[in-house]
Length: 196
Image 1 (tube, rainbow, N blue to C red):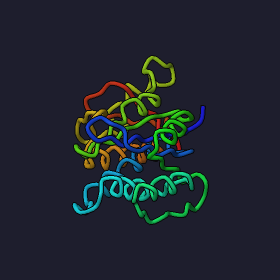
Image 2 (image 1 turned 180 degrees about the vertical axis):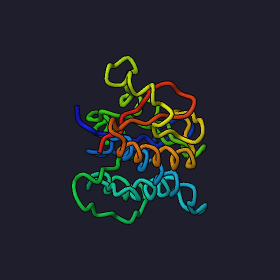
Image 3 (image 1 turned 30 degrees about the vertical axis):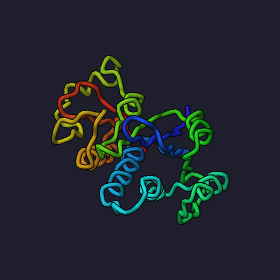
Image 4 (image 1 turned 45 degrees about the vertical axis):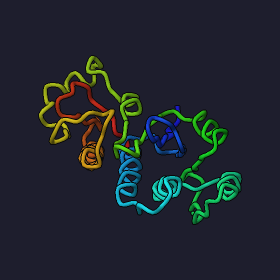
């Protein structure tokens, strides 16, 4: 299994863009990507079109448009500043139906960002990193559960605000220093793996 992540950006539950990241599926990376997108959307210019705002938000993560997507958007009258990726792992953005489907096909993990609510849904993606407490290696950890990196407050993984993401990122990075590389979300029983 790879670490490929697709982030769908929605307005009123309709997907308007996808971004694909070859190595974005690691918890700390997916959290940081979602946080960057929400932060950029939050400070958007009200005179800017929604397509331009979403593009700027996804481009803030290093993702870029394919040449076909650039041609399609320019044909529709959008003149977006092209981002030149530093390397092929920075991600790709698609607004066209065909492009979105292509990016979505290869993903191991899926996350969603809601433009109107400024929230991220990482539930399915993080669930893939869930560790069973029935695992013999983790059973001992339950004895020391109070010592594990844990968020300071409870949160709904299907509706994460920017503040939730900041807290979740901090804890997922702290987990890397823990021998088992696991963290927990306050109020939830499961443990989540956070590898380097």
